[in-house]
Length: 104
Image (tube, rainbow, N blue to C red; front, side, top):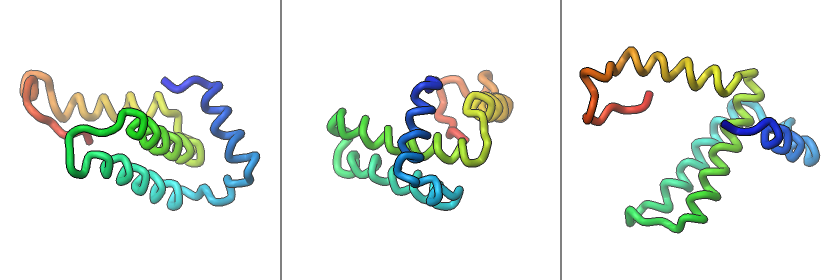
């Protein structure tokens, strides 16, 4: 998972710039979608994309996801594992092994 040092560094980055005033859940959710679209754009015409550009866009998506989790008071491990358990129940391995099942 993301280290506490990284989480603290991200928080400090926003605080130094006084950006937390702009970090409403709505703004952060919009930013996640925008950055995810930029990631997708790298694959628009090909299944190949520059590895560094993918890393940079993925980092932007993760940064906004982490910021939204912080603003909402979510524990990342808790919400990920909770959702995984719901998905495990919805898509039991005996019915989905080797088949495409969407991540929900």
